[in-house]
Length: 269
Image 1 (tube, helix red, strand yellow):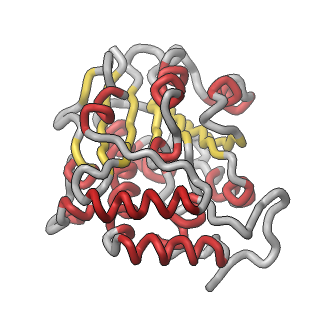
Image 2 (cartoon, rainbow, N blue to C red; image 1 turned 90 degrees about the vertical axis):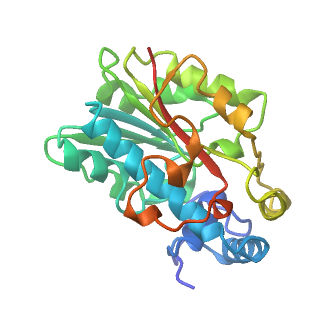
């Protein structure tokens, strides 16, 4: 197993961490034995977990490209960034519009250690990394990086991908709304939300393993997932499983029972 030889300061390697489990299951190298053990156990419970995780990532790619190409969004706030895995958000949107600005947010020491990979902006654009927690949205919105790169007189793409299943009620909707409130009309929310609607036995076993490892894990049914988009104007086809949102050739043949994530993109009127 490939892993960093010198863990970043403040990093606890004896416990599994969601970002590193994700990295391990998707074939990355920034993880530790505890993450491998947890990931193997989760995949034993649900062998489709790698497919599900990859489709969550691919949804982010398609949603970001859609916002840049079709909606003209040129500044993005990506909350819960996770470990850098190319193509990252800025690579997607700056391929469309090199002048785009991207602010990444996460609070894992290993993500911070690899933040340089998130800062390789095109010369015309800009990227920044904010070491902050979604539970403290004021720290995100008040950070020098956010204030410098995000112009609140122009629409913003708020990306909340693969994080809400780690945010427990009753804070969940309030936190998303807090991030949306200062964004101007014409901004967009792109979001994915974990569910057990399609493979309840397997996915609930994975959820129990996350909790056993000390990580909160919340699964939401369709009405609850849809509630995050109340007051917004959904982009067609609305909220769907992530592989079914603007699918491309890579989504051909995917079994819906292998996907435990809803996704949608919606506009702030």
